[in-house]
Length: 308
Image (spheres, rainbow, N blue to C red):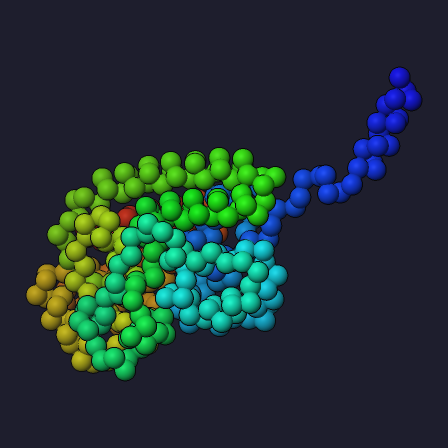
């Protein structure tokens, strides 16, 4: 008996490493909202890496040498796509494998609304993410529609299952649970935001179109086309007129952009000031990040537009 146990033990030690479960693939995600969804699919298996962390802005992000090395080394890089992260397009040309959210079939895709108050502007101008007019076709904030988020979850699970069949069951189970959570979140937000229909407001930059379309909200415009560049006096005057004409209740700033522009505009129009965080600057990364972000938007909108 002892001899047979010893033999079994020795055979186990001699088992080739290839027969053991492989390590999970290294996965890298560009921005927090997508990272949260990917982390939910990978929960219990591994944690994906994140490029744009902390309160860094995904608009015109400056790729560090360590980021470039991580992009080259990752088995899979997940990003929104060329219409959002223009800074990632060239480095990703040499990545091992990529998944661009904007290329997933069946997504709701909305055209970019141009100009600080949705009016079109000259073709020579640049848009929020650095593209010329003729190349900017869709609004890149795709994640703010939970149905789009669910399609990303499915696509991520499929790619990870192909890359890492040893953990396929876990990926599929996590994806199913995340889809259920997204459906519950969507139903919750529809109820919470329904009373806000018809209440006008202005945002700092046009990052919320998918959220607004999903839940029937009525924005009056945005302060700036490019969040990295302040609006001129002409646009500020036009926005003051728009605020007064639409009786906009609130002007929303963003965590990264809290200068005097919002305060001056709100004071001139007699509007309240709120804060929206569509890209998760203040959200902790992890599998709950997406849900925290979406509920935060709904709460901020409700608090300001209802006068709380």
